[in-house]
Length: 460
Image (cartoon, rainbow, N blue to C red; front, top):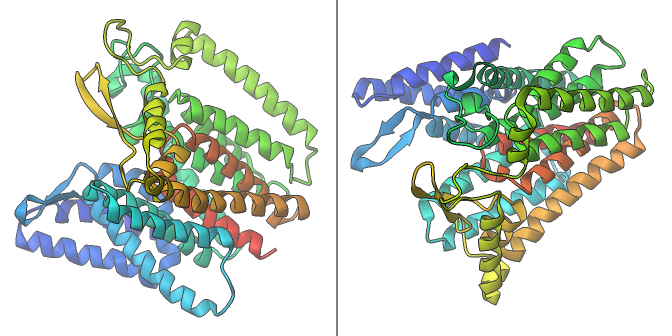
């Protein structure tokens, strides 16, 4: 916790010093950036705890500050801070890996690292180098976080501390979403005049989808902490945190994430790993809470609004060209695959080439949308090669967790594996409708989750 306070202070100082054109302030900002990098390199464990507890909120708050460089090139403070953190953790990973010796890393970690190489090659052939480089950085950053989590979160106490830090971040974001939902458009919600559906809370992340995706990963961390502590400690705080995060997902009205959350809880309950409580009771309670929650949502929001949201309506006008759901995007992406030649089918068309231009009536202009499906994104940008590499990473990851969950029931490793398997399935389901793989929120936190859980089941 002291490290969290220190780095949060550093983040704020970075915002107020680096955001300037003066020489003195720029030098001071550079010194602070080097301090952050040094902390990541030489004290990676407290730095990672601080990162986990603050990045989800801090990087969004810093994203509005632009740092202009000579030649007109600009970047946000958030981007520069992200680069600093990834470089610092990356250097730390190299040093930690050299001490590991000849022991092989888990195959999922190696597969994710291999995919980062594949995507780097996709960046070389893309016509959109700037956007592709940004996507590549997000993917590489996720891999680095998986490795640093695997190396430094090496016992249960540290894993619980990390899960608590992520839970705190999740509560902050969820409370913001709840406040928006409660007080309506006064907190910059999308209005009913713009959307034929319920209010969708965006919280501090500025996006309903992004908020829901981030909170879904937070729910996995909180459930992990609950599963490890349930047999030995009072867990009311963990249950309260999980409830707040879950409600935060619901008030975003993000269909895929709500379903993914339900799937996560159902799969975890099916692999019940808490010895002190029979599996029947929690399963009945989960079903009861789900039914009661559904009834409450219908009463609060209204059936008409929920039906319009379920149908994917984004605008009430019948004359404007509207995007109803994701059919238009997926149809365009499938057409790209059908018209591709053999070489493109094998290696893809390059990074950031899967976007579709869609007319948005609210702004009366065309906007580039990603394919909203992980596997379409993989097939178009990295071809069959990337699809196979990334698919093998997800398959081996799920298989590893399920094997340990079944073979080590009621042990800490089995408890972690059950939650990790449920979370992985939920994230895969969510990624079939969202582009979580190119987000510094959901992707980075999920990869951190992957690294720390793989380390825990390895030490069973």
